Image 1 (spheres, helix red, strand yellow):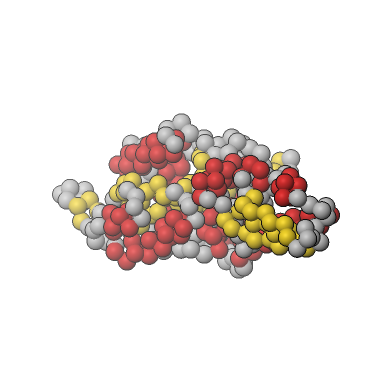
Image 2 (image 1 turned 90 degrees about the vertical axis):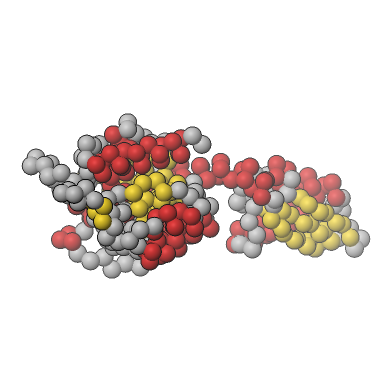
Length: 353
């Protein structure tokens, strides 16, 4: 019959279903008891995540191993591994997961641009942050993940459509930024009537079926709020960092806090808050008029325990006869300069880690 040492030897090579490390590596065998004339084996295992379908599969695997080697009955109990053990192995798991998602390409820094509600300029921030990162020498892509409210192609003045080459979708490039959007696949601005699972498949396609090449940053323009797509991003990209966009209005900041709290609950680091439409500066007097109130960005940053990355006034980009891009600020534009500062802060925060 089985001895305690034999039970440990049999289970040691089995892998934790979440950390993909053996129980020997994680020191996950916490207790082994042999009783009732050596016919009943009782084992306590510590794993990365309890009460899941993966735990049930692991249970069947371990029971099968022990019974094939002489145990008549087996009792299994599970507990969660200490946080330090999970954290030790988690980064490698997340990295492998995201590399698989990108089809083997070099893994970029993922940045999700989120907001609590629509109309606060989240897509404008996404587009201009991407262009500013490019101006600072970074290779940048945008996934317009706002499936129902896609606007990135129009904002950037993109008129062409992606082509398929070698079974891969080639993203459209504009201002040196690679872009993919649901807007490329919809005729005549038709409404999208999809349910959650279909949205998730489209988001997966934007990662796996697009030939991104090597990027330094991949920005995701999320739908406002905390719906299906936002949840999918949190699940698909464990290492994704987030920027929360709000206006100075207290209600906008209050609603934006929900998106920020979801990021915190799923261990997404919040890089900071961008306060859009912070004020209007009169071209005649130079005085600032706080059209949407004051303090929303600062208050939101305090709630989320982060900082305000920038405050953007209400201004239109310069008009250029030969360039159509309704929402892209020129490099020498006051807002273009402000986005340059925000991009530099993002690079410092991301690449110093």
